[in-house]
Length: 277
Image (cartoon, rainbow, N blue to C red; front, side, top):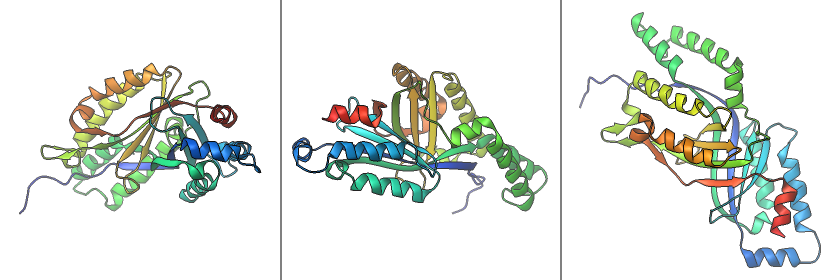
């Protein structure tokens, strides 16, 4: 069966740090027995490890987020330059007490991403005008130049290599995907239409500048969900307001699916572990 519908080209993306969200739930009796056992001080050892992970020599950072309103207890958020660095952080945490007796309630692997919808749509239209095609030599050269320009911009650097906001201790994380239903298939839309929708969506997010820091990570090929959204705010009510506004955007109302939400407040390793005692 053939169709005259033009191919829906993917947008160009540029990536930065890898990210891993680890969510743990304690087995209360097992944790209590471990803390009372003679020998190594479990919590001192865990504090040393988490302090080292917070500012690794390889770059990136780790945040400790005790969860509020969740069946799990704590979320660790790791950002690292390479996937191998993420794997090492995961290995160290999983092998350390008391994490080695905790239930791994959820994990999410992804990479920081900036989607270049507007540039992709522009260059696709230019290729069609000159009688070329998306992906040909001229398109690729122009796109490589645009990607380099974007990566040099301060805005994109903040998206690809995010820093933990010191004055925004509240965190909200959730995964999401775009629908592929009959009549609601994001991936069948033209690049121009997706660019239009994402432009309007981005305008909603920019309305919360200074109130919420948004870190978008891509997970296609890494997880069942396609993106992760990690929000930081000084006022947790901003999560409700921002997500509500975004759900009324056309792109979310028509095409977005959301996973579980995890909300908490960052703490230093010592602060959090003292509460575990």
